[in-house]
Image (cartoon, rainbow, N blue to C red; front, side, top):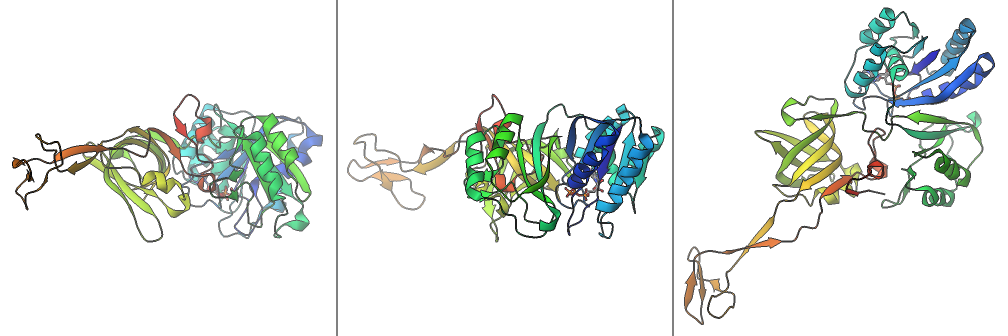
Length: 415
Ligand code: ATP
């Protein structure tokens, strides 16, 4: 049985991953859990997400179908915030994963879908499901079941004891920095060195204590063992599409639409300009189409890189398009334009720099009495190289592929 769950929490608390963690433990006497549970992130532009648009699916080998269903239903009712305005849980239990479900996942991570589209597939494939309230969670629950994670990473999530929910998390900061230095780059986004922040623990009232992300299970475990914190209630290692760019569609500027995430190639058209609040904007063009790109204030030191771009640079930009503006997650500088300055020419006789002969009258060497019409062009050094640049860990999107994962590419990881 493949069990998918989504949309059980609200801004006030709880968490779908916690519900799944509890359910998996409760189901152990009824069968055998197969492989790792999947923590699947879906389109980050989905309107009704609470935080990171996560959904969960796991597999259990069982003969006791009815009991498993009853326990799953009971756990969803017990551990969902059904009073949440935008909480519309969905529970899916499938005997097999069909081609249609796999395609549905690919669409759910890149497009905006409607609840009826999930229901149509569930009906067509004869899949048992239960939607609560509007049942919007069926979208994520079905997509999580259908997710085939060719590229994947891992996240180990530790959950808090319920009596501590809503209180400040007690985590020994020094141990977190140590865990990171022992295991980076096999784990990542635990700390943000440049911005001097720990970024692996939420600050909200939900049950998550912290999450350690990486692509090496041994390194994740070492990091976990290194961290000193309040006692955790349970922990789960998930297989996940985080850090894989699963949401990114290779595209061209003329074809983009809002609420999708793209990789687009273009030349910088206008130099980056900051507006009030520290948000930075510039535009790129590919042939006759142009697009505004933004590095917002929360992207912090990434903006220092963006500021170094000049018109003519050829770049690939990565990010979600909202209101015809691409919110940068990373960029690749493919070709640097020449930065040109002009200056008075040298005198061909004495070799000294000539002086202006007056407005619009060219240049003159007073000593040698020689004139010249044209200014001299001079290439200035660029303080940026080709290669990939990314936002820092404190601004990372769950799905964005970290540069440390890009093997064989010229990268400038932000850490
Ligand atoms: P958390 O990360 O804490 O679990 P969340 O950010 O995942 O919360 P949800 O409460 O799960 O947010 O709400 C997201 C809602 O959006 C769910 O109902 C899910 O089914 C739906 N959804 C997911 N992907 C899409 C999509 N591509 N198009 C439309 N709706 C989607």
